[in-house]
Image (tube, rainbow, N blue to C red; front, side, top):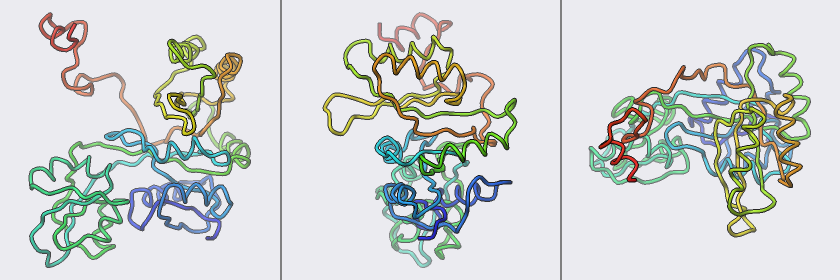
Length: 320
């Protein structure tokens, strides 16, 4: 592989689309020697770690299905790879079939893709068949299957479009991270900082926190440290330590950079408490990501209740 960009293939995946969008940005923050499709997230990480690829691009979070576990675990488990940039894509699925197909009895896509088209699949009585990626599903679709993927997969793999925009939720997005070697990251981030407006550029940091002692109050202690330093924690997931039963790593995304004074103080606090820390990624928030000005009622889980809910609704929602 030339020292270009490695991504989860084959051609036509949403990850491939993220590579193309990132590379086309003005002043793209990477040396590009072409894009190369690999078969697994692990292979993408290995290519970056070895220097076979200058960068890697992997999906990290779907707004519908949440974090992409293999990508999270690969970052947690890698000593030599870190995220240095982010791309956020709107996600829409088309349904494809082979020309001259027979009776359609199965639906195929990546498991996250199948979850995003579940209503279409159920309405047609199709049996879900997971694939390694949405593009692979389209490439390998059989005469009795419906494949789901990006619109580009139709012409790319010579398929007929059965239906367009069949996703369950409009406005779904997936976040992708751009990976680099950890030893190269300080220079990459310094270049990015020099090219961005410090007054308007928002930064994000992914941080792995491994508590030195487990037991009651550990998570409360860690989260309280964020509050005391007034560092916003936008997400938190736990991943098990592979070699230790019942011990976990907290993977936290915070809305600031490690060099910001409150974050540096927070990291000092966690280190002083005996926690082990590793920054998994530092990157500017994607310029096209946007956000809500407030929490809208239709953006909370169905059946949720609030202080203004009636007594019957509170009893039903809280089961107290």
